[in-house]
Image 1: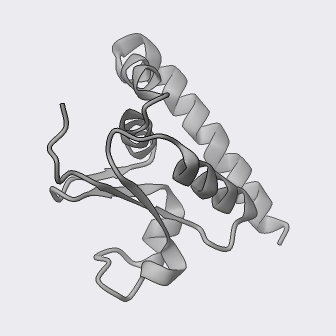
Image 2: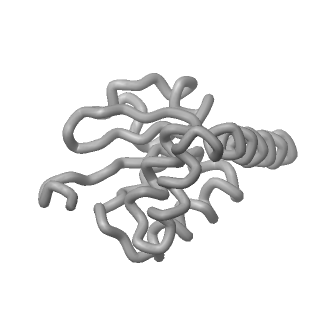
Length: 119
């Protein structure tokens, strides 16, 4: 069971079409924990403690309790928050699934980087 006040903020590249589609998909998913997707370009310089380059480097997720998750850990915690994907998150977090999760996240990040180069 999740604390009633737990929420996640996911920073994404607002100039990347692929990243915007993933954020829109996340917004539509049923959730155990609220997930707020924020374009890194909009967040940097406001109350966000991260520099824009750092946010664009890899997915960054900040929990309302102050925990920060980046890269593969960020994707896994986002999946954990979603009703239809929590089981996947737990499987991929285990010893046998972690390497697969890291490869999948690297492929997603590589695809996003490739699409950004062709803007």
